[in-house]
Image (cartoon, rainbow, N blue to C red; front, side, top):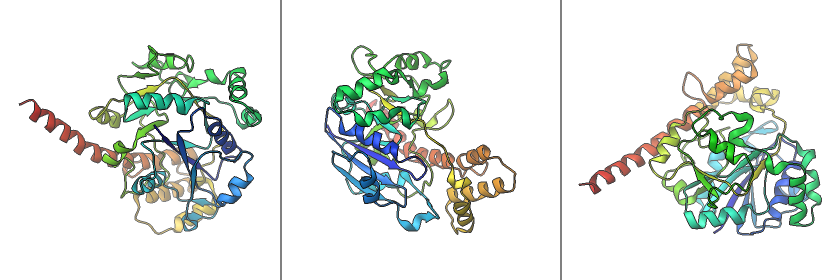
Length: 356
């Protein structure tokens, strides 16, 4: 069983975060994976990797956002489009996961998750993301680790392995029907749930990293080839406490299922919404001629922010969900529901025929 990791290199965060990600991939106990770097900066592959403290010791390919997609120093990026590009060219392994450069893995992550996927063949498996709430400096010592034991011992010594599960962060979902499950997930990476290494939950309640089977993504056009999804992350669902997409997916496959044996850790980082805050980007964006609904929403949000009609947080929310139903999350939901509706109708028809 091999896994592909799609690692985004963005133009806002400290590139030192990428060192930690690469280091954690270098020290995996299983080498059954490859990596696709998605570079959203104006730096070249050589500039980034030659400047890295840690060099990749695994198979990888490096792709950069074209220069014509930049407005000043920052790009119009489309992570969904990059996934569709990789799928169309048959580059991904049987399972794949999208990582940000601020996320890194336990040393046995590939090994343990690979064993479960080989045995269970889930279409979607949530990745057990942990919110460390600690910054880059806390994890720089990992770069000096010379053995797997050194790497793991440092995480143990800093209490990182007991970091809160992303879905339990700040106990956001403690009162939900699945609160008990996430509380147990939060108790540590070795919670065994009967030695299965995963737990099935009744309903999806929170975003997390996930592994997806390539065949599932292709069958349901999960990465929405034919639609531009600028500035939209590849979450399953962003709706607070309710996920209609989750209900539709559950009609097609086992969902949601959470991995529980090894962790992925999220490093705290600066947040800068350049699509709304950068003067050069916003100036060029307002002059940019486009019929794309997401970019039209962004232009309206920039105008409202500059005119004082919205604060930054409200403008950001407007780009995601707005009355015109043209925000990234509005369209993410609409496009996915169109794909899944046809699939669930086919499943229902098949079951009805089989029942006759």
